[in-house]
Image 1 (tube, rainbow, N blue to C red):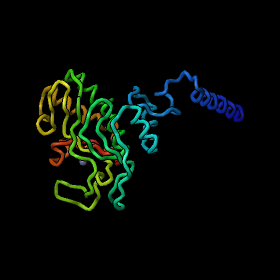
Image 2 (cartoon, rainbow, N blue to C red; image 1 turned 180 degrees about the horizontal axis):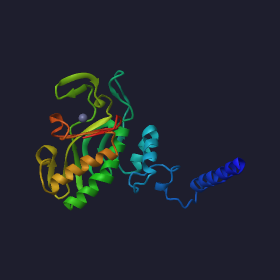
Image 3 (cartoon, rainbow, N blue to C red; image 1 turned 30 degrees about the vertical axis):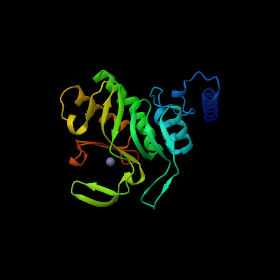
Image 4 (cartoon, helix red, strand yellow; image 1 turned 45 degrees about the horizontal axis):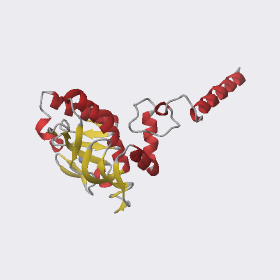
Length: 233
Ligand SMILES: [Zn+2]
């Protein structure tokens, strides 16, 4: 009985691997855990696994961004000290379709941002506002500083010190409208709904998301942070 079970596992498991790894596999790449991430492919249960692999491998991260058409010019790593610096550094100027003011950041932050733009921001803009987002507006990514709290500074280092986060302050829409968190967060119409939806949706692609609901320091931006303890406000 045990032997039969082992044989069955080998046949099914081995067969499954063969089906997934065969060049003519009928399994679409975005359903295949052996294939690499495509930013613009539909999201499936396999996507987070593919994303984790791309985040862990700098060359793969760059290639994935390049395939997506992102504007990310590779730069030498910034080495400062154990608290500050940028590994996988680049100059980001465009995501999948939206521009962004040129900003030095890490490949991993850029990749998460590209997933958010393509799978959350643009669909929300089309559905709620009837237009595309032409540009994301930011207020910085790399900053060698300690965390700020509403009470003042504390001793922990900010995720910005490693460019593991980026602060997004608003969007420029293709129809000319410009939305900011500061001016439009409290809006009760579609523009406010759009900002709330993209803030909530950022939690699918970043581990820590802080916005106007968190505290007054975040009244004018979303803090989007890759690594972290899983916190979404
Ligand atoms: Zn921040």
